[in-house]
Amino acid sequence: MPLRRWQDFAVADGETIRLDRFLWFARLAKTRSAAQAIAEKGTLRLDGRRIERSAVPVRVGTIIVFPLYGKVLALRVEALPKRRGPPAEAAALYTRLETQAPRNVDAAESGA
Image (cartoon, rainbow, N blue to C red; front, side):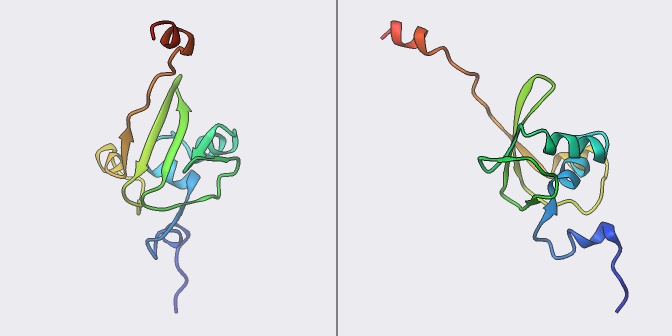
């Protein structure tokens, strides 16, 4: 049996892919090392859990939330990538979810 190339290893069975590879393949990070930095910073959440390592497995249906360029980005993984393709192909890998801006609790209570 021939050895599989490392690019095909994580997605060959279609179940999981490393978080840093997903961010890079989905063009959410310019380089793989930038994707690793996003994952290891400690501000990224995967299905509500705080993540501090880049090797966490990502599956279809996973919710990823992290700050990017001063905004909070929330995504649902729709498909696992096989390669780092063009932007149109990368955009089909996830769905952006709406995030609510933080509301001022004092202003909401004073109007009640």
